[in-house]
Length: 263
Image: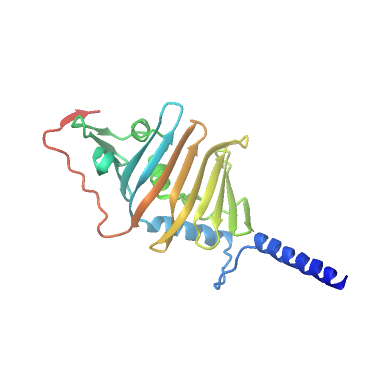
């Protein structure tokens, strides 16, 4: 009887230990400093601004009520205002190239050898990339970042640490919009965020995952951004990423015999 009781007791202890191991995050040898809200936001914004040049290759999937397609692509961004985007076909053949800035755009369609160029606008940006995002939001979406400039000197409406994430929120009373962010406490990568309107409905949300630390900054290799109002979803899976390297630059040369159409 004593052996049975001992066996049951031992089993109970083991089950309890395994249960605890499943609920408590694994500890690292490093002590993790829990940051106050103001320092956290300043670090996040400093990391975002640290990325001055970015190059990535991978796949992009865009879904909306009017468009549903995916492609292999290459993107080169040089801040503050240049995005070069290439759609690739089989064997890495370039099908289309786009260079957009805050003031103008150039779109080259390889198969027809035709160049479209003109002034930049939100309509043009949506026509090219099939999503309703501003120029600055598009830059941040492509690198998996969030612009927190407006919150640098503002107290958050909510702030707490839950498990291994910072949860921080801000209210823009002038626009009746609420912003919520979840941030990994270890590498300070923003894992997801949401923007809600006055009624509490999510109008924009993003999820970032599969992080790598490049030049001291956590960069997601998997990005998902959803514009709920327009029923648009953009998903990016990077295969290769480089940041702030000397060899990252935009080299966009148009064929001399291309037909040019002024938009």
